[in-house]
Length: 405
Image (cartoon, rainbow, N blue to C red):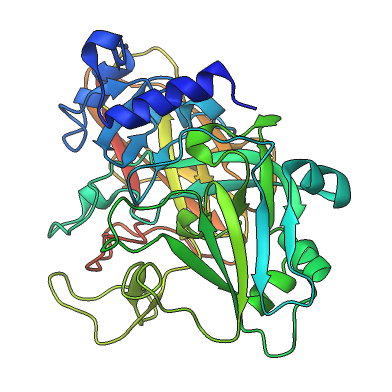
């Protein structure tokens, strides 16, 4: 059944833009910190249904970025979770009574599952995992690259609850010769010339990983419409291009799927670093998959003013592609010296790891605060950003500047 908020969301989707007179354009103290970032300066904070104030990148389709002030904690609230769609219009209303998840293709028993079926007929699985857009931080690449010029907030961490994908496929009976499964949602482009957003995963990848799930719950509640209601794919450790929202069909196929959103889109150079010399083109490419190591300072915000001689608590998050964060270090002298931060609770190898550190500015002036993380297999972040023509895989040491005085 439809609820009033779903109807309101349909209205907003029909407009395809933020309507100032309707009160959707928001003013917030978060805008002050945003203006200190040259990538985000001038972008409005907007409020879509089921969402708090988010940074508008585009409205057709909606691309909404989470302000950095939310990244001083491990769990990202549902209403602050970023939004990224690829085609327009987007689904804005779902009749749960008639919605079905279809499992088709090279299977013995094609399935049509209701939301009630997913909850009642399969074992419940949970994983806390980071969803991060492949192009997160693309706006910071130099030379500039094509694509959405995200700041750093196209990411979020949540506890996802649902059904193991391998359990769904087992119930359908995957046939001999199956190679991949494809995933498609309810978001359908308005024009035939625009390719449907379809992604694929290797069958072996799915069957070997119990943490790949079809989620119907996010942080203890149903998914927000703009984050995939009524169900979405969750592929922990991999960029969220694979996390198909508003999931409607899973098809098992006997070949490697290479339509637009797998090839040529979402590819990285076939080099050990996934990078090439800035401004050049790679000879060969492969699909993007596992996330790199990253860490961020959530508090204080870039451009914040602090008091000399008064203690300040630095807080932020770190994560990687599934090995787990082992250590976080901070610097207050542009990386000349480093000291270890205190890690918060371990919510799992795919989750944000909170960190904190006490810092006291000794005197008045500007300070560059930096953070870097080390994961369980020794991967970390470099001082110089690596470059590729799609603007993916950024994992440079991040920094904020604060003024004491």
